[in-house]
Amino acid sequence: MIRDMKLNNKTEVASLKNVIKYYRLGDVEITALRDINLTLREGDFAVISGPSGSGKSTLLHILGCIDKPDKGRVIIDGFDTTDVALEALSGLRFIKIGFMFQTFNLIPVLTAYENVELPLLFTGADAASVRSRVVDVLKKVGLSERVNHYPSQLSGGQQQRVAIARALVGSPRLILADEPTANLDSRTGDEILTLLMRLNREEKVTVLIATHDTTIINKAKTVINIKDGELW
Ligand SMILES: Nc1ncnc2c1ncn2[C@@H]1O[C@H](COP(=O)(O)OP(=O)(O)OP(=O)(O)O)[C@@H](O)[C@H]1O
Ligand SMILES: [Mg+2]
Image (tube, rainbow, N blue to C red; front, side):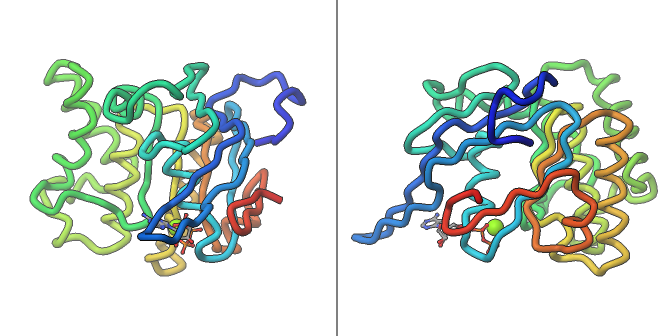
């Protein structure tokens, strides 16, 4: 990841250009992101780190097209999303971006298999290829024995692995992971990190992780710091 757009000729996967985000609560306005510029390229393995409330989740949500900025542009795989409504971006989101939420955001009434299958149901792929892809990706995260379990029947680490499988199932070029190890013991956290690093190395998936976890920060190729909504 670099902030100067022209230093490197690897393919741009996603970028933010002069992004500003405000939140309003009653009369109070908070500037959560102030003029953010960053570019993620193919094969990047980057961490965004900063204190609680500094804007990490907000930045990931905007880059992941889950939320819109108030000003600035969000470009995903060469496509400028600025003038497109969030609802109309769901297709792009499912295909290009795998998002791991700070709280896993699994759907409690769906099994592990069904949670992972969900993004593919929006792509129009045929049933047989959906099935084989879901089975493959659950195997990749080591959950072949748990496909019919509901989230409440899984440990925290297993739920996080379902969330990773769901993020990977559409073969995205970009994975955005919000504190992926915060709710896990250190061994399970290491396994999740190893899995993300393997995807980055072997499948050239671009990864951006928001975290305070020093183990992850030490292994990242790039560390970006954020404070009060500003990169530094
Ligand atoms: N929906 C919202 N409405 C109003 N203010 C919000 C909203 N979401 C976040 N904020 C505010 O925006 C700022 C940035 O929040 P954000 O969640 O991006 O921080 P963070 O760096 O992810 O923090 P943490 O490490 O605690 O997860 C904070 O001051 C927060 O209170
Ligand atoms: Mg956060």
